[in-house]
Length: 123
Image (spheres, helix red, strand yellow):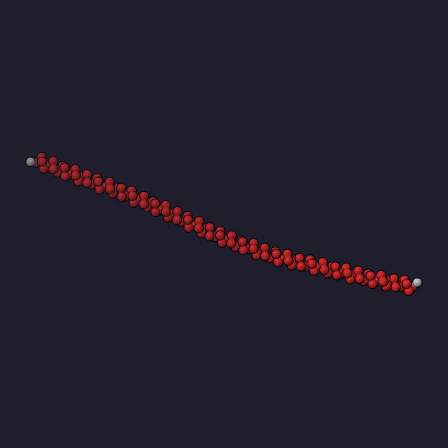
């Protein structure tokens, strides 16, 4: 019976060893799987981080273009208003000059008329 008990003890020890080895293999497999998942997630994180940085750079570039465009537009509006003022001033000056010419012609005609009257009166 001692031999039988010894064999049973040996069998149980081997079974424990087998279970222990299997448990360690399971833990190692779980670790490897976790490491693989972590590596995949890290790669995905880096891709998303890079995409975010690219999007931020593009947004900054578009903002810069918008501001430049806005400045160009504002300058164009300012120049157009200035040009319009110049045109308005020139038209006013042209009208004033035309009025002055007409006034001078009227004065000249009046002077000729008075001169004629004076000549007529002398005769």
